[in-house]
Amino acid sequence: MLNIVLFGPPGAGKGTQAVNLIEHYHLVHLSTGDIFRANIKGETELGKLAKSYMDAGNLVPDEVTIKMLESEVNKNPNAEGFIFDGFPRTTPQAKALEQFLTSKGTAISVMVALDVSEEELIKRLLLRGKESGRADDANEEVIANRIQVYNDQTAVVADFYNTQNKFEKINGIGTIEEIFGRLCHAIDRYK
Ligand code: AMP
View 1 (tube, helix red, strand yellow):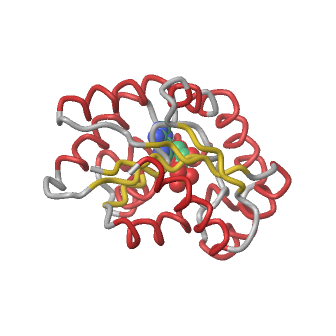
View 2: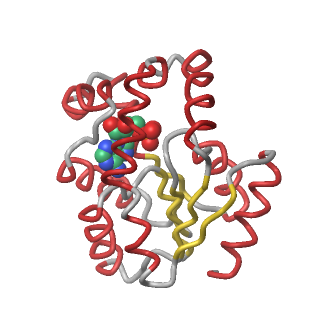
């Protein structure tokens, strides 16, 4: 199995690149942000719980997020591999994912991290807010909080994979095709 963690701050281009990567490597895309948004739209209990955290740009509690992610993996027993997009975002999530994948006889192959300057991120997120209508992209204060949460709680997750020699930093500035090429070049070495 090829299991990829697609990593990077909000607005780095994870969702855009995930679309091309799933097609190229025949993987199942699991975006925790997308799953939460679908639950909010469907007005499920999970959605109700997640909404207040998301609207403020804070993380949904680990216990809830991990349980949801594991259940999504279990829905795809025939997958050739997964792209985890927006997960893990904390070290406890990374540890839980490792344990869970080990129990299934598999593991993360590589974490690819899109590297984009903070100035560029804010520009991209405000633009996305106008186009997508995502509430957490439309407000500059919420964007600032999401970037701070990323710096405080999420950036450290890179160390978890770096110490396992499974970490690749990718320049996230350029055309979609250029960045996709860089990602594939890195991923192919872990196949
Ligand atoms: P995203 O679409 O990845 O930018 O995620 C949008 C929001 O969903 C985040 O700001 C969090 O509130 C929540 N979220 C997504 N993934 C996670 C995660 N792995 N852990 C906790 N909260 C998450």
